[in-house]
Image (tube, rainbow, N blue to C red):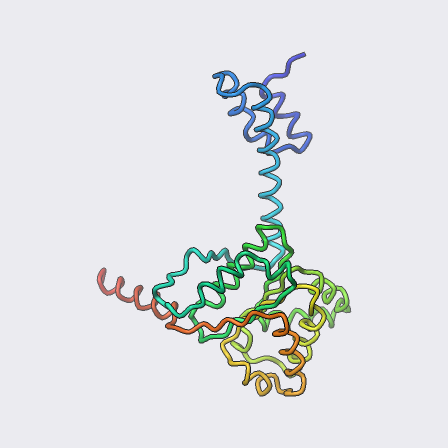
Length: 255
C-alpha cells in the first residue's frame, strides 16, 4: 500500500521526525524532476532530520546558558579600537582553551568590547556542543544566595562545576555584597584545572582585594585563575559612546 504525501507527513510527525516532515515535499519534487535518485533523496531527508535536531539542541543549550543575546566576533570594528587584542581573541575563538581547561580574564574600561567578546566566545562554545553558563557577576552572586536560601546550594554548585565554560561578566561594574569574595573563590577554585572560567572586569587586578574587602582571599583566587589563564587587556574608546553619538547625529539630521 502506497502512502500519499499527506499520509507520509502524518506518519513522520507521529515518529517525531519533524526535520523530514518539513522537507519531504521538496525532496519528493526533486526525485520527480530527476534531480535526485531515491538513495540521494533519502540521504538528504536523513540529513534534514539531523540538521533540525542539531539546531534544536543548540537552541536548548543557548536558552540554558543564560546568554541574553547572540554576539559575533565578526561584528567587531577592529579599526575603531586597533589596540584590542585581535590575535589573542581569534586564538581563543578556536576554543582550544576550553579543551585545555584554561581560564581567561578580560580587563579594560567600560564599553571597549569585553562583554561582546565574552558573549561571542560563549555562543561559539554553545554552537560547538559545550555546556555554557553565562552570568553577570552580581546576578551570579544573587543566584548563589538564592540557592542557599532554598537549600539548593549543593545542587547549584554542582551545576556550575559541571559546565565546560562559565562566563562571569562585568565583575565590579556593580557593588557586590561582603560575601562576594568567598563565593567567587568557591566557584573558581572548584573549577580549577577541571573546566574553563572567563571573567570580564573594568577594574585592574591590583584593585580586586580592596573591592572584595578581603586581600587574603584574592591571592589564591587570582593564582588559580591565572595559572592556566589568558589575560587580555582591552584598551580603546567606548563603543557605546560612539553609538550614542551616531544616534544623536542622525536624530539632529532628521529633526
